[in-house]
Length: 228
Image 1 (cartoon, rainbow, N blue to C red):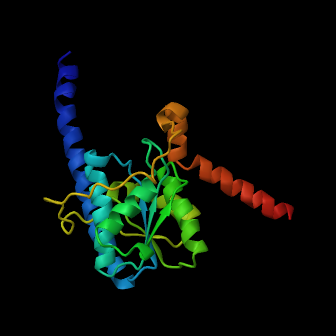
Image 2 (cartoon, one colour):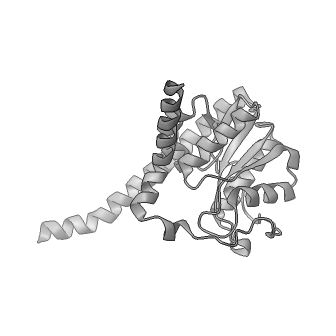
Image 3 (cartoon, helix red, strand yellow):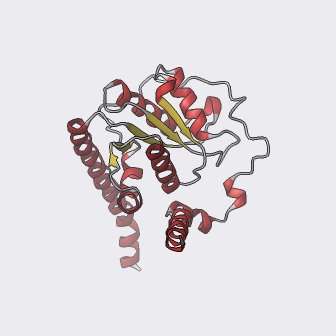
């Protein structure tokens, strides 16, 4: 009993230390990748994964990703930006909403694009990568938070070769007092929308996040090429 009590008391401390060390590790990696990207800039395009648009209740994650993309554009790290995401958790198409917001913040609209098919992070990067290639872009990077960037690393290596990572460096991105403009959502609204939470089970969503749909598409494409 005493042993169990001791474990119960020490577990939160252990988890807290682990999370702190992981957070610090992600921050160091982000600074390293940002410095490496400075040597390769400008990229032809950076890909920004979508976040649900919630009008006035816009999340900190949305703020972070859009302002980071703007920073990369303003600082000469990229010539163009692709915002990626379908209407996944809300009625609004994420890629279009984020593009419209970035345009409102002063990024030239001719240099922002929307990918509107993706419903999972692996799809964000893969469909945007294919879109970028189709537009003739060669130097491509992923611009998102350090955690998501790390989670997508192995997937990118296999399915989106050549894509670099330029994750958010929190010491550079100061969000204090910064808010995103509320945009006209008339062209973003999907009237017959059904949330992915209702369309897919937890495990199906998890498999999608891990790239199941993309892996299946790639397999089918390879089989089609063999049959030609």
